[in-house]
Length: 289
Ligand SMILES: [Zn+2]
Image 1 (cartoon, rainbow, N blue to C red):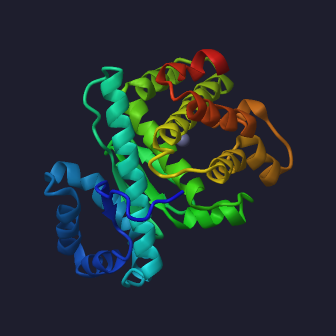
Image 2 (image 1 turned 90 degrees about the vertical axis):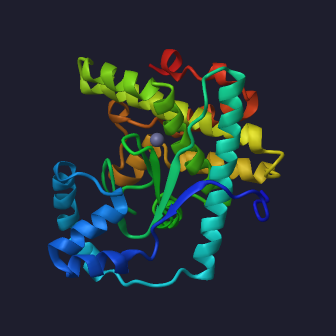
């Protein structure tokens, strides 16, 4: 893929190298923490501040050990790359929402962080892996995860593997905008067993893979995506399949406990989105439940 020189206008919130700010504020005592919170949350009321304050206190240890530093050239480039990908998802989904008369696409924000940070859905770290938080409509990504994808998950990696993951998280944002996530969570609460609740989770995840494939379909000419890139995405989808992870972690596979789908399912749905480019094919629920 060719991403250099392409449009960058995504909503990126770069929190990398921000640890010094947190350390000084925490060192400054309670008032410092409140000032920091006002900076982060734009002056919330005291009532809303209380629980956040607790979370931040638990984090003090992590933040105190972190060194503040300037971003390296490589990190700056990663920031530009992530911006190009997010911007391309903004453009693709704006078009799709218009085409299928789904209203105006509300663009998400992507938070880049190192080590750890807070989200409206709780704490985030490299161990959490990339995720989307519907409460603040932000994607959280620690680039160290992609090193893990290579070392721990045995994926080949590469820039298109990262793009696939970003587009998958944007897929969860789309599911929130369309109300799919909310419906699924309600169905999970009413489900009779954990296995049934897990199947809903799998269908939701596979749909996010389909949406990622859909993004790849619409941006392939613009980003000059080649066959090797698609293989990279497929390889990442394989590596994060539940069966591949379970096999590596515990040596055996328990399909009832799957929450994201098998390698085969994840590759299948990414490919379906990529090949068809048709939003109406997105019903993973009737096919996989
Ligand atoms: Zn997901």
